[in-house]
Image 1 (cartoon, rainbow over the protein chains, first blue to last red):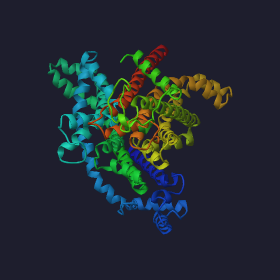
Image 2 (tube, each protein chain N blue to C red):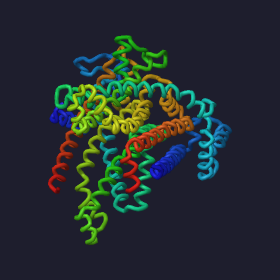
Image 3 (cartoon, rainbow over the protein chains, first blue to last red):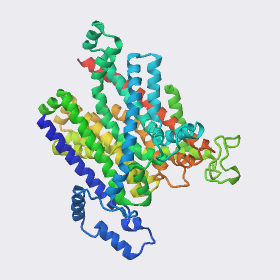
Image 4 (cartoon, helix red, strand yellow):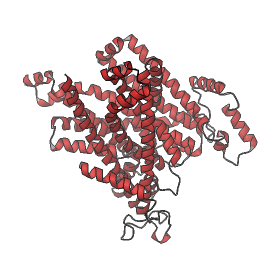
Length: 310
Length: 270
């Protein structure tokens, strides 16, 4: 386990270093002079010189890079150009909204995907199965930025059940979460179905049935528990889709989270904030995947044993 | 949706995209007297917030998404396959470096990197293609790497190597034909995700520049007039979902066929 742990941690650190490097290079990818683009054409020479100095752009690239790395270690991501605030503070203000949205989405996804996937598996090749899988195909094919307006049209404008956008009361989280959950549910219910189908043929299930256990108990206690292992890994990977989807969905619903901050900053050409947002989202994603892998290795000894011999 | 319908949708999409420049369309003609008008006999899909014919804009939008999909899938599949196959074939440090590079690119969730890149590069169809290719090659590289790692051990490849065939020749004659099935499935799903990604970038205002039409930009414009003109959002969304559903369905079928062929294949050897 220790060898696996160390190898996996080292890999994650290298990956994070690579992510930081790419994000650092963002400013240098801008065609033309980044300072001119950020400040616009009306800026005075003194303003430009001040910003160039504040961003350290007059220094050689390796020095800038070391400076950036050092800043990250001290939780300093620079200052927003237009808001006159540290980027870290902006991120801290917006993080709770995105966290809440992600949490509600995950709960909704699990609530929808579990029954759908189980039903499709135990009623395999029936109308239930094809309905559930048809829904799943539809779910992956509906992009957030179209589903969102459709849900607003249906539930906010025609039925008047939920607010149109923004963050006003508990009800306002429902539509953005539902938008994000649809695609996730589609992927997850498929995975649960195929994972359940694999498990349903196992001997221990036949034993459980032969013991005369009630079918519900066999499915929930014996089958589902074993089928969930691969599903948990997928959920970790899908968190990436959720976080990237949040950028679009938060924009659709004007939900004041990290995603909306990303788009606002891109539009305002506030590149230090863009860098901070991308860095934070990727960091969360890498750490969650690392956590999932470690938990998985801890639960299933085959993984870590396989890794250490191979 | 049956396979035939899916093929039909894709054929119409490709045909309209290719014919859009020669069709008598006026996607940018503003007719203020028709502002936000719903579907009618003159304009089956109605008019948008500037009084432009939505039907004509749908067709030019189809061209935008088709061109972006063809370019991005073409570029990223070639680039990714070359990098992945090369890394696995050479092995050693080449492979370690390439694998780490893949991990780094995979650490940016979904189209986040594409959103950031097109924000930095500025709007325009070229920059959309660049941004989506930078994100897109990774999937093909990972697949090609995994495939070559196993194919490398096959006897006919070992024999070709022993005979002194060049790397390029082995890749072309012995590896690519065996990898092509999996790569084609990946590319099929790639088309669907690029269509959605292009529309998503345009929805966020990071895609093509107005007045060029894009389904995503049309949805964004329509979202402001949901109550008075829902057809502005419905028409481009339905077009996009039809294409994406068709591609995903064909991808599923293709994968199933490939899987069963592989199973038969390995069953025959054992």
